[in-house]
Length: 74
Image: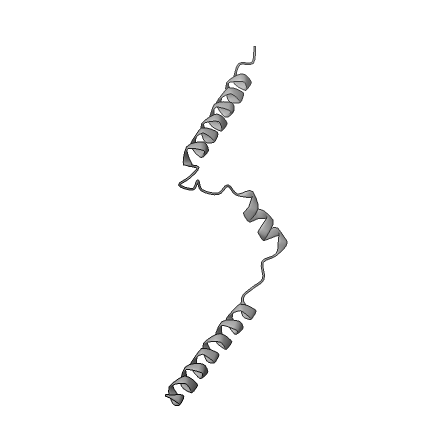
C-alpha cells in the first residue's frame, strides 16, 4: 500500500511539472491582441438571445436609414 502511495505521488508530481513547463513555454498575449479580442462582439448566450436579436435589428434599421438618406441626393 505504501508503494502505491509513493508511485501515485511521483506520477502526480511528473504531471504537475509537465503542466508548469507547458504554461511557461506558451506565448504571452500582447496587450494589442487582448484589446482586439475585446472589440469583437460576443455570441449571444442562451439567456439574452432575444435582446441580441433586437439590438441587431435596430443596428440594421439604422444602417438602412443612413444608406437611404445618402442615396437621396437632390
